[in-house]
Length: 144
Length: 296
Image (cartoon, rainbow over all chains, first blue to last red; front, side, top):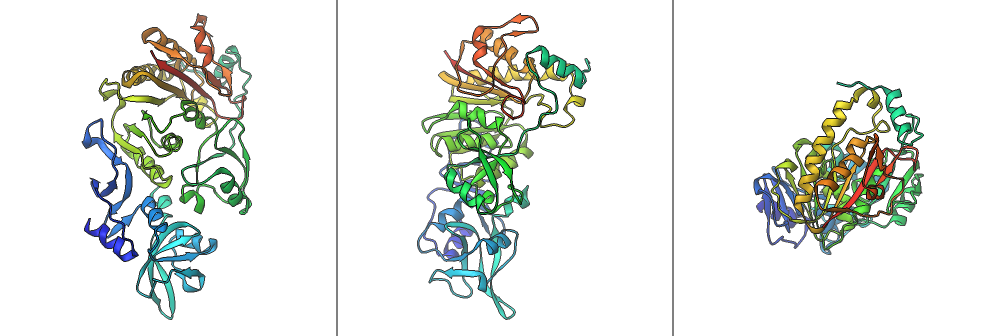
């Protein structure tokens, strides 16, 4: 819960799931009542992410946070979005808009329209300002 | 081991009333995910990127990929779960099962998860889907699909379906059974299949059918499907089910050909014709078989 809470705070979210169901390092909420042996469950209900050295949010959680007022967001267009989901950072010039609560050094969601495609940290890189890619949805392709 | 070559299989299919050539192909297709978007919105977004889609008339959310300048398995909209890549015929079993938000559905051989996510979409992420597969490695793909497509009502077990308890826990069961496959999706199919493989698959499928029926509550629905063209895995298994269990075959509004009722000189129950067989030259899909039955 500590890593999840830290991630949610960093992104400016007030969401705190009531109940956390665990399977190894995976974290779920709203689990389905099991009817077969619990030790054989590998996935259950609303997947929110997994604990690594940091909390890696699920796509489901990112969409929820993207729809939440108050979270820190940066909006980008299709070309920058494509580069982001293949693991690249976003140059500040390619950010169409930030929400007012984003300052240098903050973590923020990276939005493509109304969809969240990952998150990163708004920081300086040499003379440039960038959103450093921390996690993006291209992870689905890299997993497979 | 009885060896059969391409010509033998084609001759067999001809004797069953088909005019397939063995050279049929199936176009690539997608299924729009109504949990994430609506069909026209996605069609328009992809059209803006020069992707041409064509609605498949008998599918609720299925589109043939006419042309695309990039791989549709690696677009932003794919990563966002707006659609899945799913072959035409394989979209039919869940559509025929038609699960609703009130159901408790068991997907018995669920990996890699295309049909599991389709079930959840029909249920509007309500009710519950229990997905089982014996192969842990294939379940990783299922977990990714479930997450990507925004599914929240599913519990996944790494279990052998044959070891499940005989308790009537579910209102609907999808048994898209492991099978011999067909030549449309496997270029070496004719070289790799023998009658003994088919017989062995048929016996396994009967054990799975028996288990599925035991897990269904009275009045519950079993949807049995395979991507095999072999009567041993299809009509003869349905006949075996009717002879051994109190099940009633249901009509389905499905393309294809009425299933065979006379196979290898055996006269089958007339209701078997309510099942559907999709020959690869029927609607431009891979080979498929679909049966829907209700537990009495």
